[in-house]
Image (cartoon, rainbow, N blue to C red; front, side):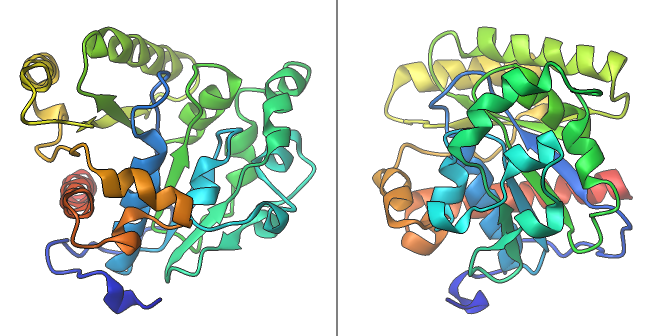
Length: 277
């Protein structure tokens, strides 16, 4: 596996001289919307243009870790240990085999963290505290959140600079994302005043389906420029890739899904450039 596997031509370069990386939480309280797929493939596309990327798997299912080829036996220290204060970031980081891309994996023990966090001090900021002074090696940190708005997601939002919302092109999609936007606003007021909505990406879009087009029109009408121009299509290669322990960008670079994630990464980096300017 080499860096030449993925073409960097369409993605802009970005200044790497920042003292702290941008931390982006990828979140939607609804499951099955392409959240983990977006985290994994966006990270892979960024790494392909020499951005140093860390994925933090904060979902007890550990799907981001599996999708990046990290076997359960290679997860001795996980996000559970970071949140409970029983393990360090340095011990938890696992290289993925993809140049410039590492992951802090999740394991089944993370499911117990929601209950254990209730009795801990600063339970909303445990992830942020564990990451302090641990940012030197990264340009971007992407947090794959669980499909809920509980304490795990709260920790991600408190630690993050921005939130990306994958949104499935289906009926009632706006209702779900509006709830998340209200949560982001509450977190901003109470714990993290710099938190912002980085963008909304429409996933599982079927251009042959009138419903997909109607949902896309509604979402763009409501959120305007916050919605990325790039949409992620329904694509069988995207669905197949995790079973091979690979991002779709490595499983089938020529697929429509891969090209869409490369385009999305280009958009994200351009937005980040405008924020940093």
